[in-house]
Length: 184
Image 1 (tube, helix red, strand yellow):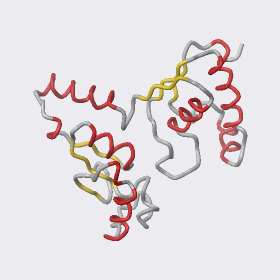
Image 2: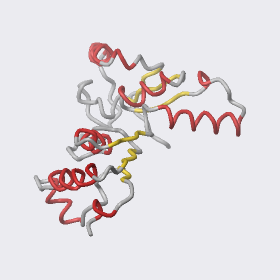
Image 3: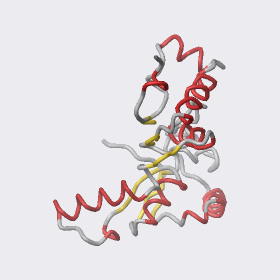
Image 4: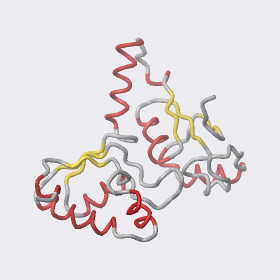
């Protein structure tokens, strides 16, 4: 039978490995991946399968309209499915990281830890809720809202930063803002 008919649980990590390369291209050009996903998840939800979402992001960092795990989880929940989220901003990932830092490095104060990310409603919110500092990477997911190009390290204007922080005020303010993140 089909996977949704025989599976014991669903692990939502994304749809990027579900298709052969040619079909991925067709999906990006208006294919029927989400229609197939909805049909399969309808069957799975009726069977009472639980879904684990490892990365609750709703949009891709590159801005392309491709279903991210958070979108898949939201769709499954809208079909009546039982969804558990373990990635940012949900506590499990922060609790686990702090446990490791405590046991391996003796760091017991979460305020000595800084979360880094490019999404206000996952990265910055999660760090705030865990009692950590945070760094918002400006040229990531929110780049267009800040009036800059993604991934180029451009500096956003004071006005656009203020507007972004006002829009996402419920997420808390990042401790720091960096225009770009890159290992060298």
